[in-house]
Length: 397
Image (cartoon, rainbow, N blue to C red):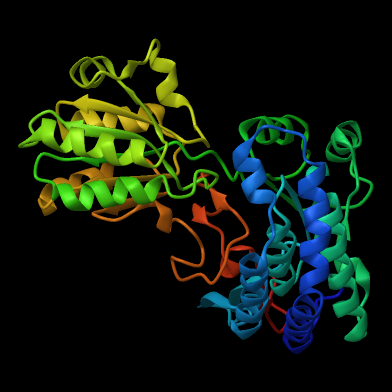
C-alpha cells in the first residue's frame, strides 16, 4: 500500500503536471492525430471524444491547476462524539486506496480523472481504450515525469495495457489490490465490468435525457434548452427525448419551429404516433426506442397528457442521468423535480450543465447514475470513503 502523500506533495505534482502539459502541448496533439488517423470505426461520438486540440489541452491544464487549489478531501471531520466513558470519537474522510478507471476514447480522462484520484490520496490504475492508446501513454509518461521530479514513485499512476481477455482476468482475479472500479463508457462496457468485477463499482451510466415542455412553458426557453441539449452529441448529458404537453398553447406553431431548427442543424427528428402524423415525420415502430441513448444527431419528440404522465415516462425509460422541465409554474416544477428519479433535475435550464465543472465541483471523475456511494458528478470531495478514529485511555466494554 502506498503511504498517503502530504497535501503539499500532491499539489506540487499536480502543478508540475500543468507545466508539462503546456510544454508538451504540440507533441500531445501530434500523437493524438496518429490515434485519430488510425481510428477506423464509424462512431462519430467516439471520434469526437477521442480528439485532442488546443482547447482540450487548455481544459486538461485548467483541471489539474484547479485541483491543486482545492482543499484536501482526506482527513475531513464528518462527525464527532464524546462517549459517556470519556472516549473521543471522530469520523473522518479517508482515501479508498487504489482506484481503477476503465474508459473509452477520451485522453482528457487520463488527466482529469487521474488527477482527482491522485489528489484524494489514491493510487490510480488507468485502462483506456485501444483507440486512444498513443495519446494515453504520452499523458501517463508526463504523470510519471511529474511524480519523479517531485521525488515520488511512479507507481501512483499506472496504465494497464490489457486487451479484453486480460481485462476480464484482472477484474476477476486482480494481480494487485483494487478498492474501487469506475467504468466510463457505453452500456456494453458497464455490463462487462459489473459482470466480472470482484470489488465495488461506481456506474457512470448512460444518458438518454428528457426535456418536458409543460403547458405553462416559455417556448423560447424551451427551444433554446432543447437545441443546447443537442449541441454536443457525444456527451452523456445530451438531450435525446422531448415530451410536449398536449395542452401547450400554440403547440403546433412551437413544434413546427422546433423541428425546423433541429433540421437546420442536420439533426434527424423522429416522432411518436401523434407528432409524426401531424408533422410528416418518420414514426417510431417500437416503444423500445424510448430506452435508447442516441449519441447521434437524432432526437425523438412525443406528445404527453400531463406532468404526472411525464414523470412516469421518464422514470420508466430514462438512464437516470438528467431531466428538465420547462414551465413558469413553480408548483408544477417542484412536483416534477421531487418525483423524477434522475441524478440531476432542472427547471428552465439545460441538461448540459450536469458536469462537475459546471456544478461547482471543479471537475469530475465520472457522472454516477448509481445512488450509492455518490449520485451525479463525482468530484474531488466524493472520491473518498471514511474511517473512525477513536481515542481512549484504557476504556473497555
